[in-house]
Length: 168
Image 1 (cartoon, helix red, strand yellow):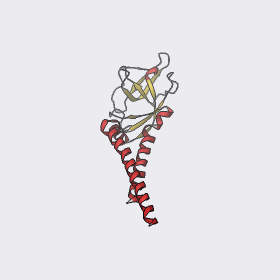
Image 2 (tube, helix red, strand yellow):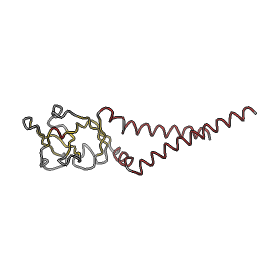
Image 3 (cartoon, one colour):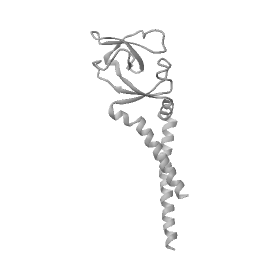
Image 4 (cartoon, helix red, strand yellow):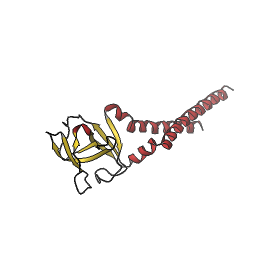
């Protein structure tokens, strides 16, 4: 029973460490995980994928035609990832288009609205990230942390009991 407690606690800690590694740590390096929510860039970025975006300078120096960019829509809240079709260096704007879309986006995007350049896409991981960012997911993480404490306490109690039994 003692081994079950110990290995269960270690397993839960490993899951929490992996989640932290994939969802929190990248932000420390200017990398932001985003969840793909539309089909406009399929098959390159499927719905439900976790897309890692590296922050880029606001002068547009990292933008290239034919590459993808993540940018804010005019509402300054919604992020979109589309392919850069053309760059107007004089007006400091890009024209974009989703790979699965028939036409280019209606509006040009200012360099200052570009959040960054996507560099990694992990299919299906966005579903997990989306679940964990919700209330139920956060509650689940909290319960896992509590469970680790309980299992560790049980393991320690059993170890103490086992030591006392050996003294007799």
